[in-house]
Length: 118
Image (cartoon, rainbow, N blue to C red; front, side, top):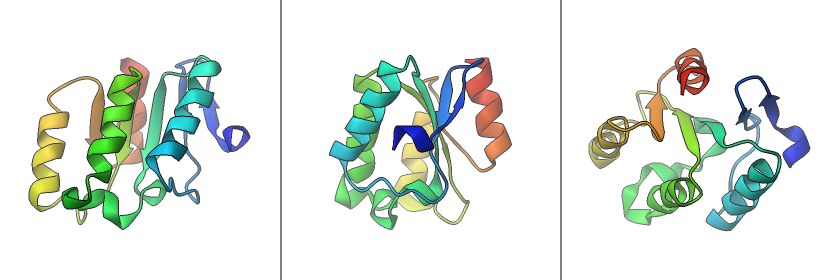
């Protein structure tokens, strides 16, 4: 999987392929391990990389993913659509965006700009 990541070496971040879905917290853990091994500590994750259950906080998948990112001290930019940013999930996004570790964006370019300035 690591060979399929787009790496921006100048700013030290990886972009997960648009056609790839992270299927479990263990898989995310492996991906982050590969990134860290290659001195990448920032990632851009697209909505397409996430299952629909990620956006349903009752499943606890979003919480598990964010916990892994924080535990391993990654900075992450998530690109999501406004349609997914509703209900309790939108409350989590607002809280997360108050910090500088994990942020959610509606556009790819905004996410890239943020990753390149942190």
